[in-house]
Image (tube, rainbow, N blue to C red; front, side, top):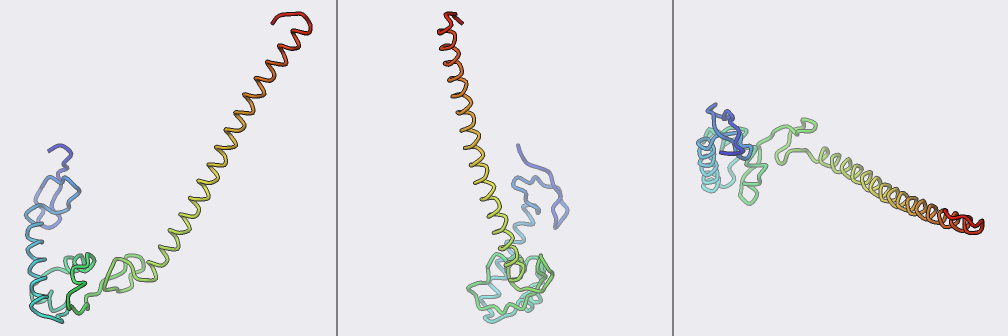
Length: 161
């Protein structure tokens, strides 16, 4: 398998070839998909169930539940989202996404500042490229005119160059 890296499965420890950066082996992926299906079926069969109740009933991990929440698997289902975990930015407890609303707003502001600075830099680079191009053209024109004047000067004095 060209391009595959051998890794240890993060769940069972077995060595497996990772083609696209997978962290778990195919067997554990299948088990995880089966667990996801069980969770989804349980949620459908028990409208209004809380995340805590799902975890207790099926014995699924916080990590799996968090991933399912982040991927929006419960968005259109009648689930009480009492499943809290820390925001990656500040540690505040959240129940959806990766960042709390404050950290998300801060990231947006910082991203906007970086984008604006990048746009300014690009404009400056374009101006410099234009100035450099005009300077190069002016130098070529100056050299051309200098050669022409030199020819005229030599012609007036009767000498060939």
